[in-house]
Image (cartoon, rainbow, N blue to C red):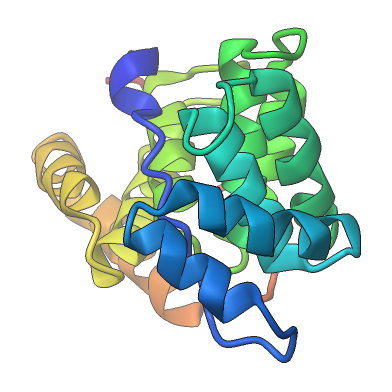
Length: 204
């Protein structure tokens, strides 16, 4: 399940920035000129630039332009996550979930996934949905919350969430589906996700 849960869809999520050099570094990375990307990005990451920290973490994670080093990947992703970068929060959560470069810690993983999911991060929403569906990592089983999270992720284009939502709908009552749909409509990015539903806790 871990493999399907966290294939680590590490989209860099790079956006425009006021820092000179980052656009050049991001473009170099996308062009697979990793040496140039490292030259442009590393100083910005050390200066606290959140997107540069995330990209440098990605380079260490993938071994692109540097030797693969999961500890360095965690260090830089954690710096970006602490600044609120949702992509980085998702990676940190996945590394805690699998015990990659850090002690396995499902509680910490859930916390980071939730931070990213509450910003609208589709992969984090999908991951949390799987945890609610399969009673994983100490999470309660709740089909309504799983459906809600997959509904949100599917709206952002996550194909796996679309498939999971269709599968779980066949195991839900109309009341449960209606509740999940209502929760989806009511939620807004940047606000807390519900931690309990009214009708979704039944086994099955």
